[in-house]
Amino acid sequence: MASIKDVAAEAGVSVATVSRVLNDHPSVSADARTRVLAAVESLGYRPNAVARSLRTDQTHTLGLVISDVMNPYFTELARSVEEEARALGYSVIIGNADERPDLQDHHVRNLLDRRIDGLLVSPTDGGSPLMLDAARAGTPMVFVDRWIPGVDVPVVRADGRAAVRDLVAHLHGLGHRRVAIIAGPAATTTGRERVEAFREALQAHGLDLPDAYIGQGDFQAESGRRVTEGFLDLAEPPEAVFAADNLMALGALDAVRARGLRVPDDIALAAFDDIPWFVHTDPPVTAIAQPTGELGRAAVRALVDRIEGRPGESVTLPARLVVRRSCGEPYPASPEPDSAQAPAVQPPAENRSHT
Image 1 (cartoon, rainbow, N blue to C red):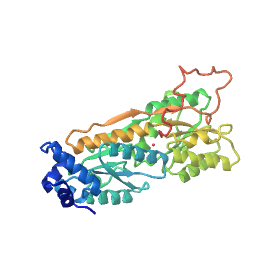
Image 2 (image 1 turned 180 degrees about the vertical axis):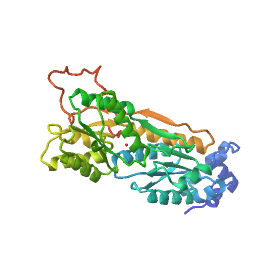
Image 3 (image 1 turned 60 degrees about the vertical axis):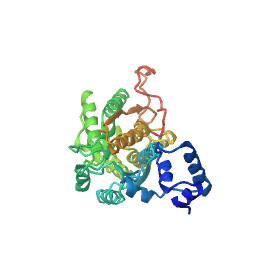
Image 4 (image 1 turned 90 degrees about the vertical axis):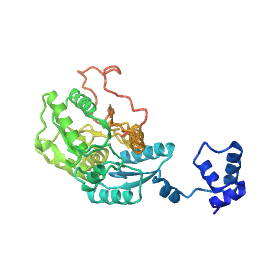
């Protein structure tokens, strides 16, 4: 492999001149710059990133710790983070926490040991001393999707409250009155927030959310299956179920089919986090879609701002309801909603958007 000395000899300049050209320093003549770049090309020279990081104290590498790589929402989030980082001159190292706080901290520790320039995290809970210490120590950090309350770190997230209100209005308009939720972990901000938003939206329509209609899930398909089986065993099962993430919704759909029942004829189903699969299920699933791609891009921009000494702003983007057929058709007595009145019935332009 060619060295910087080889490039200097080939171009007939000093090693210092080669270094200035590679770092785009203005104090190099056009002729010398041309000869150095030609030598770099002919020799196939590639700068030593490790040596450069030791000199500049920067690795141009970001760390991303996501909650579950198997969840299509986080897969799409990681993709958009990598694309935006690459456009800004950064590489990304990804760690999958698998919804486990211990594994999350393992990845955070390893990334910090690798001297990353900044860290993007979707916390699995709100009590990681390691992340709290890293934030207090001044490590450039941004929370994406989830966050730790009280920590002075920018948060890039979607606000689903309006979309949840639209969903409950949709269910109410279809005649559903007994409505249940498969909740995410209470240790996560998204788990708590979606239950609160759902309860408030029901109350606005004069409906209660009894304890029997709150099933504790963990953002995994198996928990959605288990909770839905419990709902179906009740003396008075719910008429509709809202799963607080996409994987739990898929588990719920499996549980309904295993009982020989049909969605929406026997029970309605809706989900938080739209995913491409929901268009292909039978029936297609009504879901709340997050602008996942833009969330990932905004998170990278906020983190790079912090790395480069700018404040880095929190960003909140709206989620939207995508109405399909899993909650039922309007009753004959009700007028068909037109496009001006219905809450976001069209599929999102970026159908990868999903939490």
